[in-house]
Length: 371
Ligand code: PEP
Ligand code: MN
Image (cartoon, rainbow, N blue to C red; front, side, top):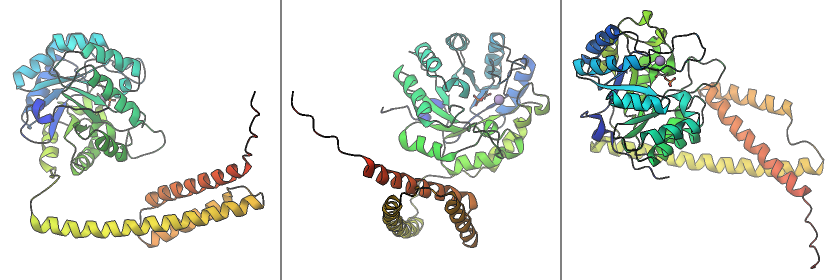
């Protein structure tokens, strides 16, 4: 589906990038929100965020103040001069948030996973001009994320964007949610006109790692950041470990290197052109080598077929991977990168061998005689 979203510049009320949405994970008390808003506003932020309804993983943890906190958020925005933003998960949330004149709404990761919920929200959002941001689903499924954008767009919303908040993949990573930047890049390639914000707070789960992810987002040319900031983070009722003080937020923002996607600098452009040409030549060599490898794989498949040997031998795969990892280390290539690459190369080799062996097994059915 072609998504013709309004450029961020038209709805965000900011003169340049990045758009920053900051504020506490949750609205806790009116006073907490007012104080945080005043201190956040001094840091050059566009929108004040606060969670009113909190989708918590386990029950019996703080699940948000609910509707009574909406007037606090509205007042905090008005007093600090900031626009306001909150998460909505049901049509009733949408109705309440719009009634209290919240300026921007986002759909949370736990809602994006469910097309029924997204469809209900889309219906509730029909006709609104308030910007809507859609967080990625908790699982790394780009189609589900795109589907949510399409549902909201189909309801007539044009001021829309997405928020990258990382993916829950199980297992150990440095982060609470794995960034999986390749999915973000694919989102940009698929929907180039849709603004993408990054949420380093929910990706990292740790305040000390927030600057690293925020910078990474800027390096990729993303359009903005959502960062959790609290007047006293350690006392926060939710997500205490990842929130920063408003003043620390200011430092993080000032230390960011904001890059531009293009420049008119002729010397730079000429040098970049040369290097890109070299890359193009190397890529041609890589493709030719991969094609050569594949022709050998085909011969191997015929050979294994003739002797009725399985396409996969675990001992060979282990030895191959160990050997390539060792060579990669000598060549100063990242171990995870080379491992992932070989998993793809080897996976394709097995697929190709299976295709050849099963084609040989398929016997053409005899043509049935006419009735
Ligand atoms: C949040 O922004 O507070 C939140 C709950 O985020 P997510 O939907 O990314 O988990
Ligand atoms: Mn949070």
